[in-house]
Length: 320
Image (cartoon, rainbow, N blue to C red; front, side, top):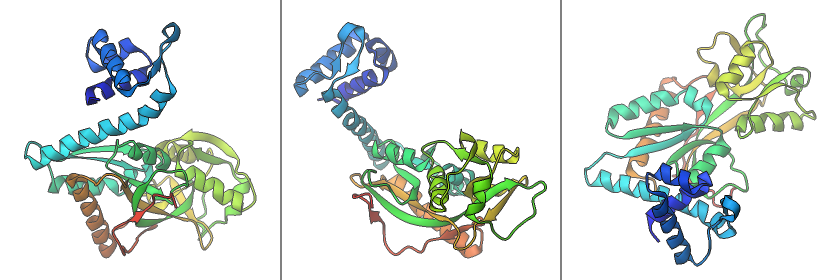
């Protein structure tokens, strides 16, 4: 079994077309087909059904696809890590983060890291926690800043809790009388702007409302963070968001929920079965130092608190 064969297999699986896969891989179609057949012979099972020109995965192909993606991603990580050690390149960090963190303090962390390690390539993927966990498990990220806790069906990860943040009710500032807090029950009577599926904020909002005994009423749903905040500014409804995303948005007001309020925990995660690269370890150290310095100097965004670290991480192989 060769990595090239696995790459060809993944290309066909994703395009469901041999010619398009060959174009993606920049190889002649007969050569690609030959390598896929060789892989099938090596494994002793057909990977694709080719009936009437319709290419679909067989059960064997379905089983191989996630493994092949992970093997290819790990091979690329190995090349990057060895290249770094050999002095050929300095490495890379593939980081996933939630939209609230991307819009908040992450830019300052990346700037500090880039000043310290200017030769390391930074690749950032923004998304909801569930999406980032899946991407991390496929080997397409080195680290991810996600929201805890993990779900029972999430893959095995090592997580380290780093921040606790307040969720507030975001509403338009115009005509708003500032209040010390709001009760979750008040959202029963107000239209809400809701995030798309896959966002942890969507799940947190639904869970809080249902615990209070009602289903929220959506004025609009399906947006990303920037879109949701803009919709709230336009008066379409209110939204439950992290307090730090309201920095620099004078058109929005954040009202905390009545004590004990609603908080969530941010953790840095990596796969349990793969040790982070040296570049990724350097980023983790930079992030933790930045957060420690910001907490000491009082520079953390409003509603964020540093979690005192008592260990190196938590094995979440059981998803709990």
